[in-house]
Image 1 (cartoon, rainbow, N blue to C red):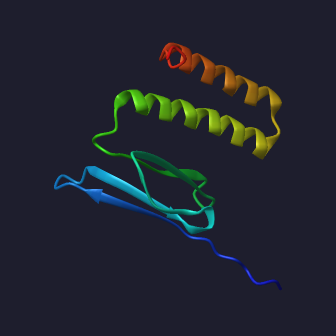
Image 2: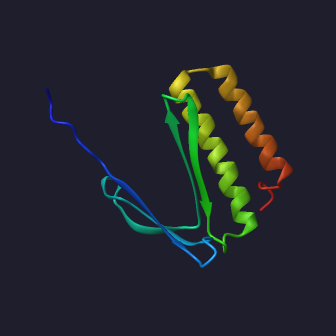
Length: 112
């Protein structure tokens, strides 16, 4: 049996007295990321036992709403790409991309 390789991703959250995130930092040594600051994050993991998605969604209190809209749009686009890579489902991937275009249009993200 080959030796298994482990990789670690670390997320550090600084909270205020009300437990609202003030700072987010993340490290992924294998990706060359060390203690990088972020304003928002979304993490989803699949629990095969319960057949459900478990999530952590965090953003700092100084995350601007206009940046949050762009963050959501880019996340949706990335999810549609990931969905295609995982399923090879052309039709649904195209439908998801159409929604991403609609989302950007309604939020006027392309008018900058």
